Image 1 (cartoon, rainbow, N blue to C red):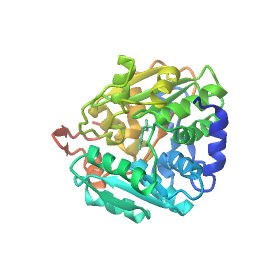
Image 2: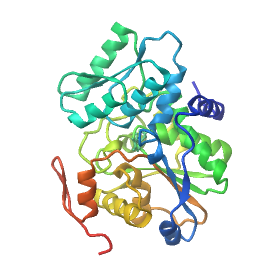
Image 3: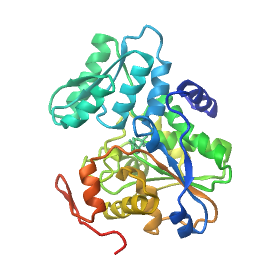
Image 4: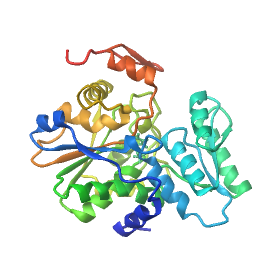
Length: 335
Ligand SMILES: *Cc1c(COP(=O)(O)O)cnc(C)c1O
């Protein structure tokens, strides 16, 4: 199955009224820095605080009438998206999680109207329960990134960016399972074949980066990172997002935890935006001098805002932050 711009246009119609057009605004600080317009696509303004609602809504709208409901085992933004989308369509959603998931995440998903099923001690146990529900209850599983409808939904972001600024030269896309990068690159490159789309991710546990270098999906260890929404594997039996990222991305770049910290501070102190570590990887690469010189307008996607505010405030105040075995040293902004 091969996706085209037609699927992305259909997705836009399917998600209208739920996951709508978000603002696309210049960052004066970053524009000044590169001597070109630098634009931010504010997906942190979606109703669930992240872009994943687009793909989830498109997938939920596409399942046939009479289907019992949907399920997934994401505890992050995709789980929120599926919960919200299912409530909008008025169908059952069951989000499977392990016992290790913090209560606040459980409560957050329940508040969106979904059932939460807590099983086992690992993400693998949660995934098993998900598959059991597909068999036993007739629920449809929605993958966070390796699903044609999800990729087409995320692609509507690229469509909106190119419609607003057909002169964009480069798009920096936060990269994890690659659904976002695949959809955005497909939309952007169909409209403007010469545009550059660069996937950016963190050094710690970058599954797609490792897979693209190996030429096939590989297992990576899941480790704590400020960009926690970019963690997780791409699936050893990946069907769509790996090949699309391989064929459509011009480059993939890694950034360190310190570079992510610095970029979160820049986005907060200069643009006054509260954003997850996952969103700022493009800005981090830019500030670290890891991108080629911009000779035209550049943009990135502020993908989400769902983070621990205690951690965020500590980071902004220049305090040390501990994530599992990882310590991110504090740094006061502007020093
Ligand atoms: C899921 C997610 C990403 C990455 O999207 P993929 O389609 O998995 O590559 C980036 N940022 C945030 C905030 C996310 O939730």
